[in-house]
Image (cartoon, helix red, strand yellow):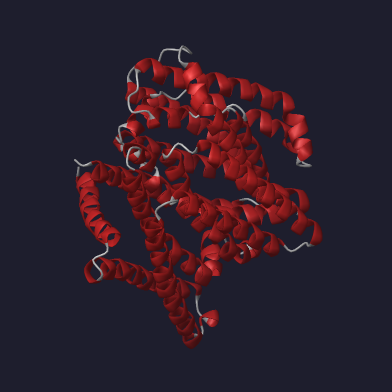
Length: 496
């Protein structure tokens, strides 16, 4: 099997696990949004921000270190696991001690115990067998597929049951702890033997990880800066609406396109010696992302209110207004992931770190100025989306430095998908006006929404088909070929 085919098959399998898991997650979200008040989602957003910030501080870049190496020994693998475990244990202790001050920073002293209890998640997750790192390196995503599916299938009914009983954000924290313990058990069931604790190669890993650590900390602060600003300047209900709208906007990225492009780092490492081949594969990856992301943004712009009403219920009007704006973060995130992976494959970790630092400063200062001058949450959301798109363009220009021809091909598909999606949007708006959708039954409006989605998918496939058959475009032909074979492999896996 060729590397490209193996990568795409791995991507399909990885994405499939996330899609199935997210289908279960969607069901739980629909129920939880009707059980818990928006303020409870605001609380869990604050706990998650603080917890995963500390998680990043303990980030040893073990996964990136293992995956990017051309060869890996057992000692190096166990060192990566051991270093990660030690750092997670230390950070967990730091969280327990500093919990009162963290809660005070967010003006939520009642969350002190929540920070302490949730800190247990970090060392528990670090206990997972390093076999997962080895499987990702080998692009063997089948065991990861099933482990992820089992974890999600058991976590969803648990969080729903706890939400009914507790009626608070504690349902999420308890479920995360139980799910982490289950993940550890499954990892050792797959590995069959425990790892050996060793720090013999820790200096080598640190030389790689120190810039990745700085980049991860700054990148996470940048990505969550808007949520922190909202928590400081707006009410708990507004924060809950913003958090849920952001989660809905990023859902396709984290659970579909994100897993699909996860194998890219493993594949790009094979192109380190050929910058032309690397640029070619990066352009192909971007085109693949764009033909999905841009039409999806247009779909959300048209149907945001219906999507929020369907998934969250009638108590989330502000989230329905925020979703069409925050969906731009989905486009930004997916394209940025590919661009940053390309720069990482070229060894430009320091450059990425500097870009993240500059982005963080601009985003934080800009959001603070806007939040201090207006109480309009929509203006803040527009600013966050605008900053993201701006720096996404900068990263792409740097990733294709010296090869503008490939960048122009990506730009061509951006324009083509925007044009086709705009025609679709105009057609759907005209249809809605003619049918007077505002006075229609909600179920009928959902049927029309799904019909318009089929139209959009057909239009998207048509662009790829015309590019492949009419213009003989290399990237379009590659998408057409791999999609057909990967779809066949997916159904073959399901039959087994």
